[in-house]
Structure formats: C-alpha cells, structure tokens
Length: 155
Image (cartoon, rainbow, N blue to C red):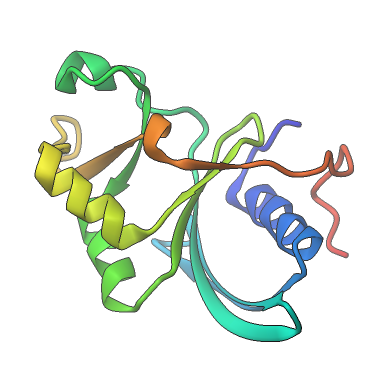
C-alpha cells in the first residue's frame, strides 16, 4: 500500500483505529497542515477512554542515522519543539506512517527522554532546526489487516 500524503496517512490510521474499536472524535491540522492531532476514543472491555495521537507522515526514514549516531537503525525525525508540544498537551502516542504504509508509535515522553539520554538530538545543517531522531527499532510497529487498496476514500 502506497501512502502519498498526510491526508492518506490519516485515513489509513483512522481505519486502523476503527479495526481496534476506536473512533476519531476530532482532527486538528498541525505544523502548517503537515501533521494531524487526532482526538479519539478507544473502547476496552466496554469502557471508553479519550486518547490523543499526533500523526506524522514521513515518506522515508533518516537513512544516515547509524552514521551520525552509531546506532544500527534508520530513524524518524521530528522537530524538538513539536515533541515538547506533544508532551505539554499530554499526547498519548506519537504516530509515524511512511510511504509504504508502515505504522509505528511511541509515547512522546519516552521518545524525548531517550533522545536526551542517548543524545539523538541535533541541529540540521539545511534548515538550522533542532530535531530529534527516533530509531525505528525502538518504535512499536502496528500490525493491521490489509485495508482497501485505495485509502483516499472519505467514508
């Protein structure tokens, strides 16, 4: 399954939530429309609870992570300020979706803690932004039943 945009990533994630007895309550575009803050409700043993997800679509992971940090993995990258914002507003899970439709998540508090502990934070040469790299190998991969081939449906 190919994912080409944050919109397609959102609809994929929405269908995954529905497969797991969850519903999206509200979606708020973030970071100039490039990310989504998703307010959802999940049911477990007949009880529902509110959950916040921060969704990021990244076509490809940071391939040079091992070269820079000596840790054998590729990584997803997020601005440090966004990760701090996620912690400030009590986001439950940071979710990454790549162009192949792979879905990964992590608690943003854990991500920031590990990034500080391992020094996986750097200032980019290109934009000067301070970013946090999160190795794919420490993320939880979300497995799901194969969904419709076309995920751009608005149903």
